[in-house]
Length: 201
View 1 (cartoon, one colour):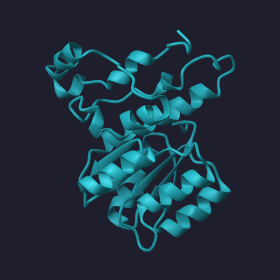
View 2 (cartoon, rainbow, N blue to C red):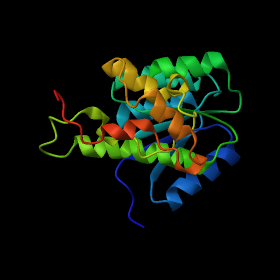
View 3 (cartoon, rainbow, N blue to C red):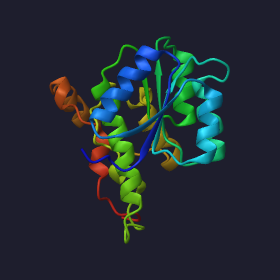
């Protein structure tokens, strides 16, 4: 299978998780590099551009949140997904403030991780297309299911959009209530409504 554009850096010290996630993503056509520590990750990030960072929260030495924060200082357009066996409101909120796309408690479905990765890489690819300068950056992000029951305040991706563009009313409250009635497998991220919206309109 031809690899998708954009390389993934997986930062995970637990071998079983690291190998299973890597194998899943590689089988699905992604180019994946793995490291076990935050320090190793920062060395690689300084030398190479990665489409998405997948970071375990608890790492030896520098933790996943610190890695992402430092990575953003090195390369402001860095995109990241946090995975953790020790979720907490405090770390989830910090992940949201830093602009991580997703915060996934373990055990998680690799399908959910892949959907977020796919959306992030598609966004990067769309930005590189010629003649797209007048389209909002929101245009590629919503190829993912909503995993927060449309509580956008709990979603790192939605908060990232808020931080970059201010408050955006994607759909009305009535429409949100209707979306919540859909089967879980059909609850798409509401930001898909912005696909193809020109800036200034």
